[in-house]
Length: 376
Length: 170
Image (tube, rainbow over the protein chains, first blue to last red):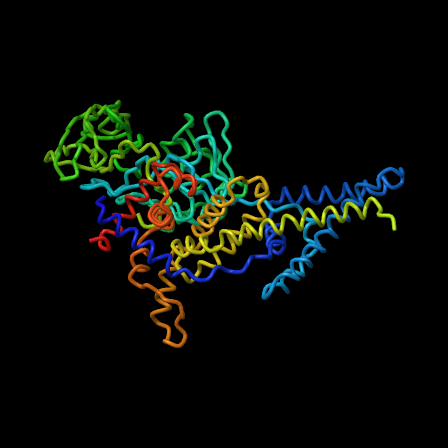
């Protein structure tokens, strides 16, 4: 970036902040906020609070009866009174907002709110979909992408972060990629046992993709492959509010049993990519995935920023011509991060590249894509 | 008149709580102006005050707030967090409303439409990276710390912001 551009960026930011209004008055409604947030607490915290109240209610008379428990009940009372006094004290020093601060004077007897400020960026691998060029079937390709996102709440852990990213508000994917998982689908929890992952979601999941049967299958494939991307898992059980799913999507599919990675393979492109296309330094780039192509021959091209094919290769999948097989390339090319990798097979009829998947390569950028960047 | 144990505790609690309130107010007065400027860069001048108020309320009520050593950085992160939750299209909507509003009802403050139109193209994260780099003059490591992301992510945000602002820069 030139010095001239730097100057302009500086000018832009100066002009932007010059529009700043007067700072707002000191916000004194802390106790109001606490009460509002407390009402949204998780059931377990509510239960814990209720248990505490019961314990205190039972314990106070016992302590009084024993004659030695004056300290604790007095301390509880004191806290409440202190809060009242403090709030009144604030009110005396305030102007316009003072009246609103007097009402919640007794809220400190409730547990402190569980705040999530500030959110932390999380890393994830997720499967996005792409409409391949020169497609034989019209089915979308599954492509693994690695990146970071800003979770709305506590993200999944243990390799399931991709599920959080896939259902995060404002998910943004690189150009040419999309997701069929609706943004109102929410994941309540993930458990893993043996080779199966159980994903519990809200009722929005039952509505499917909202884009017809192929969209529903694609949505399921995205969730299945994302859930099993790490950890060697082989199948996924979908539940909604802890209950098995018997009617899903536009056709009311029965998903009550484990759904293997091959459950909906008839609805994907003949070439799919499992390895996020990232690397650094001089290391060769691994391009791996699964394909069902003529004579199991998968082709690869590296295209530079100018559109020139700068590297070509082919690999033989472990199965082909009617069966799915795994393939892998080790691409020994001096990437700079502006290249695109194209994976496809050559048509038996005319030799043209078919079912072409195009993926931009990220180089020297271990964080990967920014899944939360609104306009990228 | 003798002071009972419970009365002493009451006074102590009042003093401790009052001291905490004063502390928050002092912190707020120290940083309110720059936080409002930062929020203006993130969400525009129309909603900046609300974002700052929400961010400070959340920060002050956070359990770890009393233990936070760098409160300024924490408040910046809180402002960014609230701004990110802010509806993405709010700035665009506000600009449309302003355009449609009659001169009498239009906001009185000086609004730089060209700049807002340019910034509208950026995500909140990109705006934050640009602001902290060019307005606050922070190095990339400090920007990363202030945003709670990696340095690589900051560089990406900046690169993408420049790409989106190409027209403005040309």
